[in-house]
Amino acid sequence: MSTEPTPTGPVRHHDHGTWLVQFTGRVLVVCPRCGGRALVTPRPGLPAPKYFSALLFQPRRLTCGGCGAVAEWTADQRGAGLVGAVPGGTEDPFFRRPLWLQTRCAGRILWAYDEEHVDALAAYVGARLRERHASPTMAMFARLPAWMKSADRREEVLAGLATLRNLAGLSAPADRSDAAHERGDRPRHHGSLLFRGGPYE
Image (tube, rainbow, N blue to C red):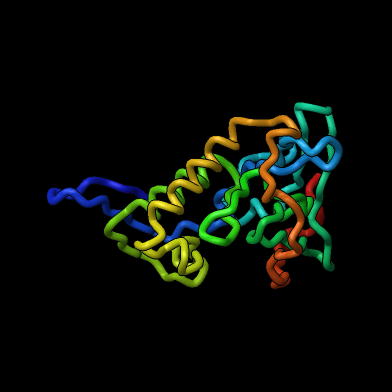
C-alpha cells in the first residue's frame, strides 16, 4: 500500500490487499471505567505473530492511563482451536468497547482503530487514481462503503479523518466524541478458528 505523485500531478494509490486486521495491533477505545481514552494491545511478552491474521487470536490487554483500569481478553476455545475475534464496526473486536476514534461525517459515522489506520484511510480517500493489485475478497479498501470512496465526498471524508487524527492525541473523558458510544453494529461472527492445540500461555 502506497501513494506517490505521478508525472501528471494526481496522487495514485496502490492497494496490495491490505486487510483491516492489520490495524488491530493497537486499538484506541473508550475506557469502561472513566470514559477516557484506553488502549487495547496484545498482552506483553508474547512473540510477534508470524502472520497478521494471528492478531485476531492473541490475548489482549486493555489499559487506561487516566484511571488505571486494566482488563484482559483471551480467545474462546472450541475443541483444539481458538475462535478468533472479528474486526469491523464501531466497537473494538476484543472487548467490544466503543472506538475512541469516531466522528459524524456525511450523515454517517466515520471510525478508525488508531492513527496508522487513519493515515491509511486518508491516503486512499485522497487519491485521485486508485489501483488494486489483489483480490477484493478481504481487502479493506475494496470493502469500504460507497460514500467513503465517492469523489463527491472526498473533502468531507478527509476533514472527518483529520478530526479523528486530532482525537487520537486527546485522552480525557471530556475529550470523548459525541459519536463514540455503543451501536451494536458488530459484524456477524464467521467462526474463524486457529488450530494450535490449546490456549496461549
